[in-house]
Image (cartoon, rainbow, N blue to C red; front, side, top):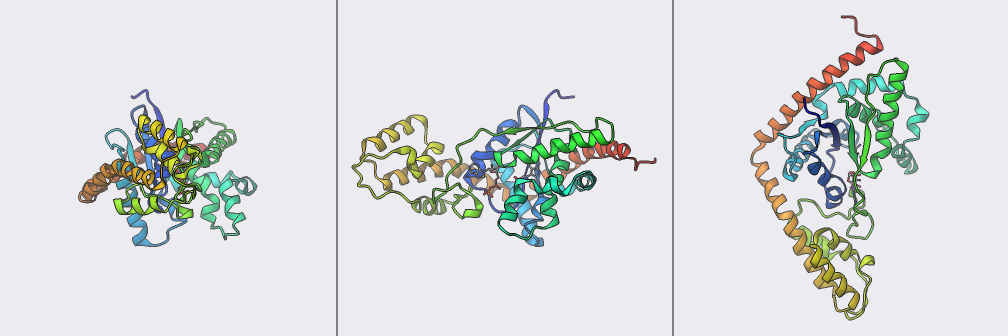
Length: 327
Ligand code: ADP
Ligand code: TRP
């Protein structure tokens, strides 16, 4: 038995990842594999709230799995699986639905945000914190690494574990802790707002040189003459330099911004070069994987089997606890 703590996280296969997702979440996934018994999930049943098209969902699941592998998630170290391969997730979500109240779910940020936007919300979206609680609690997870925006959902999982243990008078579920990934001071998008799929201001994590160039060139900048001094911390291009430039390079850049004489064009060209140097190996790895789909599918199949064994064991305990298990 390994003495390592258990960790689980997941990503919805909806849309392509951008560099904000990488610095905010995915990079930590890779780093955590060595210290934890990690499980990384392709949250395809969560994605069904957004994608209701067979071919598109198929492709999104494969894309995210390839992304995971290209970034360095290693099936020898971690269990990489898709949620729909382990039907216990949805079974457990149902059981949680029965002990959860509507007002409690109505307090979830994700629900409130959707409501504020006047969206007609599906029951799946409304319930989604309970499916996420199922994802986490099925595996006696110690730690859930998530971005700040998902913290409340981990708290919901924790509350639900406590409520279940209380109602059924048995310590069935372990209480998970969220591990908030260090704030990489929100990665700005090409328009200066937070980089986000929903704002259309992203730089793709596997973007081509052309796409990187186009995105960086579109970043709005001030219209001061080159010779004038600029505050680097208020400059959108510099904020991105912070993620990609080496420490010494960054120091020089900072000085040149402050002294004046650093033109936007030069700064952007340098940024393009640095982003390309960072992305090129990832893009290459990704490209190789797309030519080895048997391997990619095997990773998911094998991960699904390993997760299923754990989930089945836990669900036996749950069914027994709630009183539906007779033999
Ligand atoms: P999006 O806003 O593009 O829809 P998601 O909400 O799917 O992104 O976020 C997935 C993960 O990436 C979350 O853990 C979130 O905290 C992180 N993330 C997303 N955008 C950024 C950003 N601009 N800066 C830092 N982290 C981010
Ligand atoms: N809800 C998460 C998101 O939107 C994805 C997710 C689903 C997840 N199940 C999870 C994250 C379990 C951590 C643990 O980003």
